[in-house]
Length: 369
Image (cartoon, rainbow, N blue to C red; front, top):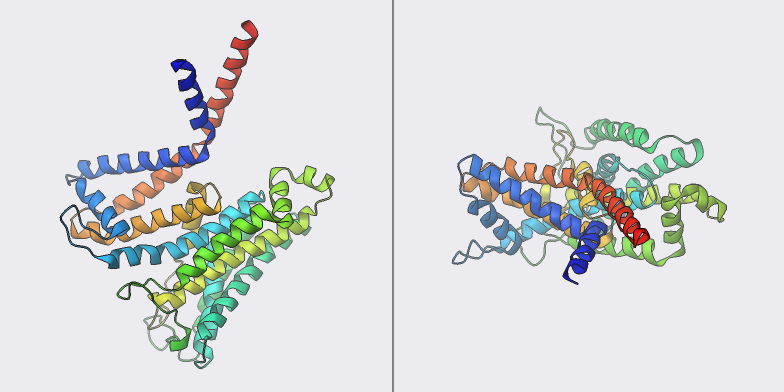
């Protein structure tokens, strides 16, 4: 009996994406701990920094500092919102590597409203809406190219990432009171365009957090509870079978990429208006939130709740970097942990081979019996 339960547990573990995600996260932290020891530092500092970022308390007898929690949640906003585009497209059988370009276009559109239009009530809401629509347009272009002309979404999104980056530089520098010296700094944003901070006022946590939660709920509802979501999932499972069953797969591809772009565009607007660039937008390069969103979606298994929790995890690691530096622990350790988690997640397909092999062995035993 005990042997049978063990066998069932192994099969459950191999088939559970949630369980394997937790396992690879623990493996990433384990190797990160060994790296901290290898560089001659106390590994407890790593977990102290993570604890401060997560709950705001420095150790058992340490002081509370909720600012760290606020910063963690603020960092989580773009991670989650940029994870949703990758996850949403993946459920439709697409690989959206263009989250960074859609993020940049959303930020640029929001910036145009925040800089070129004088302050007016609820200007921040208009900026968010414009950023969302701009991201949807940028993602929709890829969807149309894929659906109508069979252009690879990977190639199209990579090219559009660079177009968005350099287009943003050209346009941003030509906004009123833009580039005036060699600091590459654009005009300041209108005060009414900034997102209000809440709960933890001495941090960058702002009401964009509520829009992030709303985006996760919309993701779940559309994908799991609507006919449109069913057409998305059916297209992702088997595009030819979906077409044969009467589903308009081309429309599913186009609409799903537009929705994916909307999430990324909202992320760009939230970062811009959330306090990170209150004195102006400094143009130096990509923020990489769009690319990190791919890792967030992979760890979160392309599910709304998983992406939310994964984004929080990446936010914790991001905030822990500054705390670790104060403890003389290299902040690069957190980047290594993130990379290891993604590598282990990517290797999860190997578990499918193990599960298939175990199934064959069990069938052979039953046939012999």
